[in-house]
Length: 217
Image 1 (cartoon, rainbow, N blue to C red):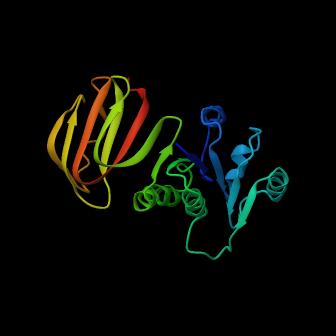
Image 2 (spheres, rainbow, N blue to C red):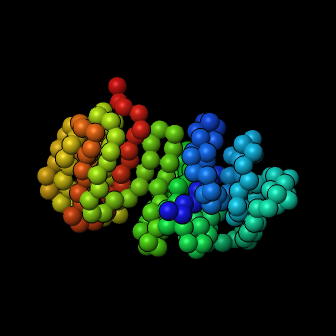
């Protein structure tokens, strides 16, 4: 499956995480949103494209990447879309239907929330977007999905934008049958896998899944 990796200009504290993530996805289409080029500066990697108004990117880094073959897409500073949205749209426009978004959290809370809202862009454009951090991943879920992992891994579900109904959880420490999630009552926080496979079913609506990779202590 063709995969794209979009680097946002948020926080990536663990450089080894970024290098390992890129190494595990050789051939992925890598796009940097403006100042996110700084994340690649010490990795030796060259992005396929750099997108944004270039108000936070180092001009010398942009010039070096341009010389090494990166596409540079410059937009005006006065625009209606964030640099990260433009980067994600470029990946989807190029035909990528699996998009991993890194560096999307940390820093300013408004930017973090805006990046989480981009998960709905994937839903509208028939693409699966997930935000990936060293400790967890975030994505939207409608319908049913089997989560494979280890007992003890934390999985939280959050209603987002509207109430979600018919929530059923099996293989979890706290099972649920035909529940309803709505804003203001986030009772499905900090559940845990009780088995190696847990099933989440959403009959109506959409939930935000936050899945942690490390088992809770």
